[in-house]
Image 1 (cartoon, rainbow, N blue to C red):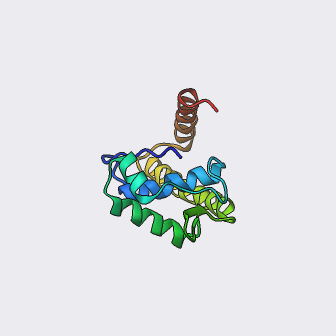
Image 2: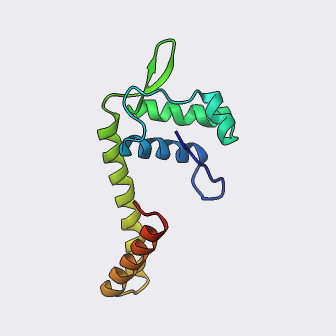
Length: 130
């Protein structure tokens, strides 16, 4: 499981871990029943405090994304993919709504906002082809 954190992006590191795990599960990159790295292993890999990873894992357990497997560790829950897909859609919808509201409040006309969104989506697709 590939997770990258950026201490300078304004989002708490534990929240970055939570989101990236949810996105990986939603995308099917991490499947139900698959074990996640131990707290110590992931903390070492990301060069973060183990308490940060533990907090992220607790949040993922509370969100029913991860479940404890006795004597083994934490695994992705059987219902996690559907739940994570819904969470991803909700999170991204909220962030887009905030950005669009800011664009409209700044005085941009709807046509200009639409053109801006299309141009940025096109740029993202060029940088990250599917």
